[in-house]
Image (tube, rainbow, N blue to C red):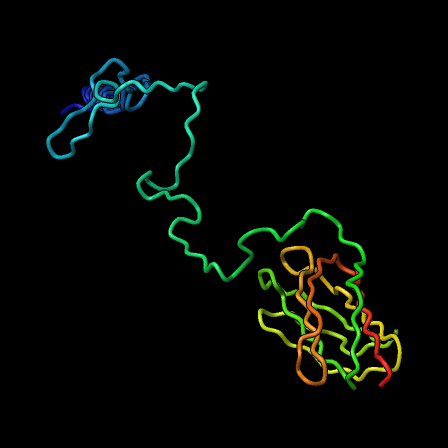
Length: 219
């Protein structure tokens, strides 16, 4: 090929390569931005076969709350609720059956009277003539304690005391009134031959005293 034709051919080839190179460049597309997983609020709830979800809107009944109406709270069914103390049995001997005589009043000191005896000593016995509820007494003779604490039961019990010539002042001090006031007791006095020479009863408040005078006659 003559050299004067070689230059135009070279120009043509370079132009073809340039055009092909331009056609290989990537084209630009605009970026579209949209909401992913858009939720359709008007669509019906999905009721598939593999997972059955009940419709909250269609199947749930309307709940009405009356704030003005109060219903008591019950921890147990009504058939299991019983009145306190139901079925409990109380031994009638465990406590006082009835209030003691004059239990609402205050009982001050009592004078039981006087009795004569020619014996060397006397036996003084006491018992609670009402319901046994824990009454206790202290026995004095002429200002001296001869029994500091006698518990009154349903049976007679007491002490023997030697008598002095003349007056012998016995005092029975109520230490308490038990579980059913007042302090109650029956007192019996026996001579040295075992014969009953005196009997009486007292009703005392705590701290009160019942006084008995026994006079020893000279032989």
